Image (cartoon, rainbow over all chains, first blue to last red; front, side, top):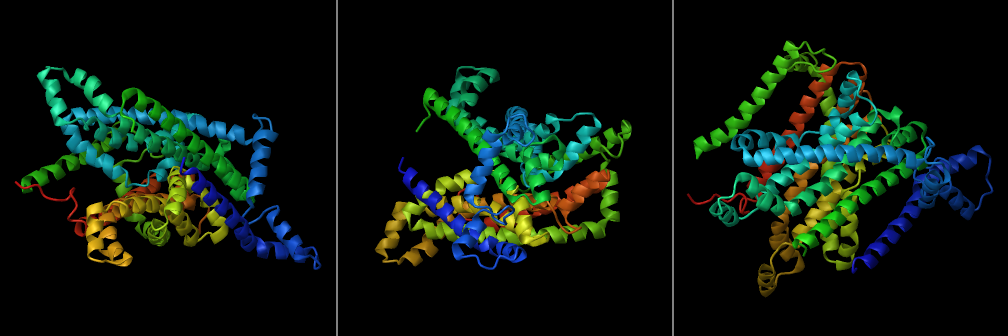
Length: 288
Length: 258
């Protein structure tokens, strides 16, 4: 708990800085606005309040974002197209579906790489190399290709989310499945354990910490993938579509609200994985 | 040793070539339409014929990537050194840094485009934000990694804070810093390309991908992706090479005695 106070103070400092930054970033806009309405008799406090409550500010003030979040989350029916709950729901569906597909694929690949020597030498360098490639660049194309096969809706975006999330899982799980000590592996051999038994009784349990570490990375990556995919195919909604719509119409407050919603989703997903990790750690006895 | 290294190189090369041949065969054998998946040969042909466009796109995007990468990494390192002296800031900033690294930062792209315009500056700004936090978190961990024995030794030498920092702690932090530099090399490419989806002058790799997808020129999209992939791999490779030269003393590079 020694982190709570410092974090709280720094967050407060960031918010304070934010309000100050608003004054600088919005000053020109607000001055023009007053000039256009022939308002020349405003006082400094009028000016500052106006800056913090602009319709389309360059940088919206924190309370404007909170108000927008409050309005679009609690003020509208969840089924409304303008409700953030509706869009976040779409994004979460894609993220979770993609995350499940991606991590299943990642684990499968890792198991194959660990057990087939040939694959390790030939496939692993490509898996590592493919991490250096901007995979997100593929997103618009994947959406279009899947469209050709009449695969629309949540699935194409889930595929992109899966595509982004499976690499960290593969890399982490290969490391994890290889993490047992040679001594322990030898012990399994003296028991004349089959490969299956070695896998389920030694390798899989030993990989648990690595599993959860890569799950956390993967779930965050899946959300990024889903959001980017939504940007490229925005007619189905989702937080990415909100971002794009906001940037088209100059609705800065809407962009920031969508951004915060995405951040909250990401943080929540990582926290859930972290919670499962901690419970498992306690049950399995590897907790620190 | 030599032949072993060669075999290590040959296996993935053969695998990669095999995939390409299979891809070509599938596309030709099943007559896959060009708008779904072009054959590797078509992509190579496109690379050759559209070279000037691809080079222009590359030059546009790489400006944002490099500018953002250097500013973001430098800022992350400097802030890490600054907060290193204040445990309070460390305790407050590190959890936030870890949180931010898990956030979909590419989402700030539309905001940055609004603030800094359509040209490469807005892309650089996205890259700065994306690369800052991995560097911050890694560098702080790296600065803490020098052992107490070595620190005590520096103290017995009567070394000043600055001397301990440059001669011991920054050196000990190098593996961590390079880890961040490698992660960031990929993030920088992603950030710049995605930022271009939100608005750019009519040149740039992200712009090219987005428009050519719309015009169903999928071979051009693949050609751009090849350029992006080669650039990303080279970028990563250069950083890894420098790392090898600079941190030759680290356990992961030491040759095992034969």
